[in-house]
Amino acid sequence: MLSIDQLSFALFRRRQIAKVNSGFFASPKSYASKDCTFEGWNRLSGNSHITNSHLGSMTYISSARVSNAKIGRFCSIGFESIVGLGTHPSSYLSTHPAFYSMGRQSGMTFVEKNDFAEYANVNIGNDVWVGARAILLGGVSIGDGAIVAAGAVVAADVPPFAIVGGIPARIIRYRFSNDVIAALLEWQWWDLPVEVIRGISKSFNAKTEWTLNDIRLIQQKISSWQ
Image 1 (cartoon, rainbow, N blue to C red):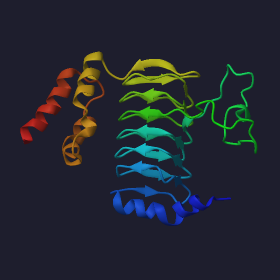
Image 2: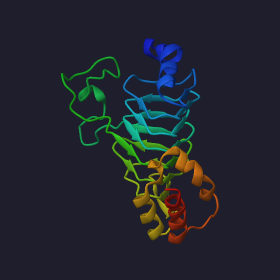
Image 3: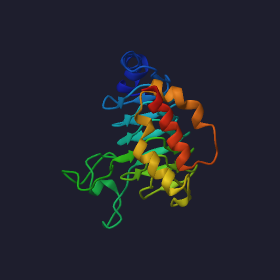
Image 4: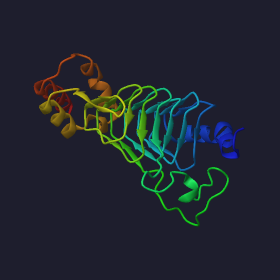
């Protein structure tokens, strides 16, 4: 059974968002709460469900659940992944939310105020790929350019351009050498105007192994246009 706000999103709000955000599209089965914000060219496919979150330009969601997250630009959030999974206290006598939450998850509560942060914010950088059915616990930060392998459970911060996988997720390797990573973090190509990115887009697929000089050549190409 759809809530009133879910029905409102399916019938009206998703179209209103598309009018003010270029390239925005949301499936009729998807949902975004009123406190979500979008930069444009976003896609919410399938039954994606997003609450209290921000999506940067070109970021898309594939039937995923996203809560309390700030997600950068050019991110790919994979099929049925979960971003911002809530947590329970392990040091209290009981893990049940009736002892610390006003949420009435089971229909009642023993407390008069929230006594534990169930949902910590998640910060995801730019150009991040979260694989299918990966889980990101609340409070984690994912660095620019990182990849989270399918099925991974991320319980700790992920460095920029790291590839992580497993339960709990651990670093498998880094996408590039240290000097290339440093150059990309300094450059921040994802903040360039879209027409500039379009002009250099073919260069992104020109190689499979990258050096610092390769990055500098692309930057010089941009400089020559100015």
